[in-house]
Length: 146
Image (cartoon, rainbow, N blue to C red; front, side, top):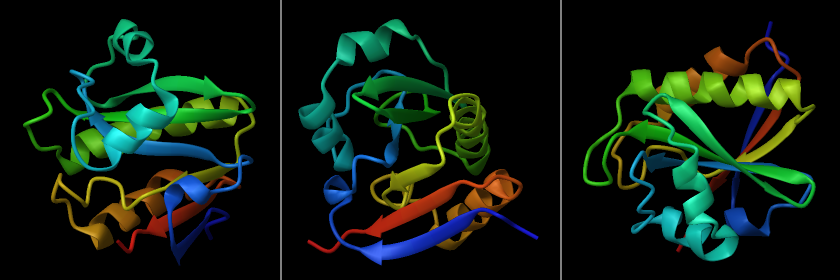
């Protein structure tokens, strides 16, 4: 039985309460030039700091924003590439490890990997449930409506 709660709501991810850490998918090149990545770049910046972490696909780059963490799930090598479910799985696992080590139990995300990256939301949601199944982590998924 899963302790992890995944709740989908409609709204703007950036209106999430500051108690929630945030995550989204990026490429290892950290260009953050399209989609929701642009909003992350504009809000949190620190691109040189992300690049210094030199994270490969399947890993996670991390920034701290006051009391929360901002997770950059590196799911592909270059910004024009496409992620695989395997790299997303590995990145989610890396993020989960960091979250549990740092007592982070609330996460707000978009439908990760499903916008420009083209992954199927139901498969991604299944992955989230599988990776976080034995944790008390609450995941709030923002379904963006323009």
